[in-house]
Image (tube, rainbow, N blue to C red; front, side):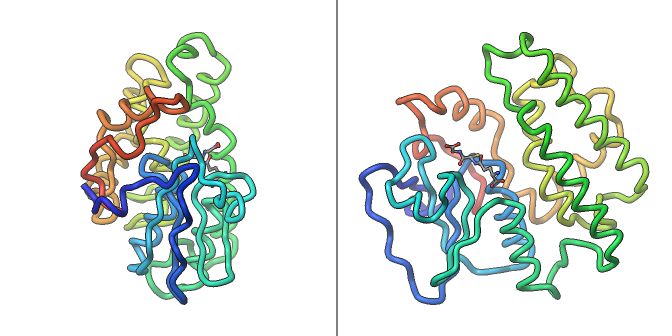
Length: 245
Ligand SMILES: N[C@@H](CCC(=O)N[C@@H](CS)C(=O)NCC(=O)O)C(=O)O
């Protein structure tokens, strides 16, 4: 369990914790797959930062000054604000290009990675079928299956243990939060990932990666969180997880 102060999610009515000069701050939410992307890049590059969790159901009033869409993640440092998970990751990568580079140096290969991430993003909603939609929303379900199929094909084409080669890079870190939630969310239906052999091997490697392993939120915690999310009973602070920041 992270330190209580860091796990706490600021909500409506709570004051903004004062910004410390020069300190990089990440506005996050413990169970958010988008914010995980930024946290992975911060961890991979060994960047020191302050974590401020936001209750994304009862948002603090000041959060809209940090992010006009009111979504996490957002990075803040002095007068700089950076929003959108992929943009935050690219910002960090450009700020610290020599430590754990997230993209290949070749411009064509970089563009290939960026396109893949962008296309993956179009189908993310398919992974978020709520309980009542499951089995009913065939359109979203088939979009999600198509997305997973394209991941499998891309792995086959690349022929490397990770999308980025011998260790995880931006493609791996940006799709992982959504892929590892598939089995618990059962968004692909019964048997979910069974037919995706390469994907399952990649998932096994990811689970053992030093950045990913300590940051995996347990299925039970995800299930409990999603059961109450977007209801007055939303449980941001109460749910236990061993995942570190
Ligand atoms: N496109 C955004 C999406 C971020 C997002 O949807 N975050 C969720 C939490 S997982 C959120 O803050 N939701 C609050 C809301 O939709 O009001 C990104 O990539 O950063």
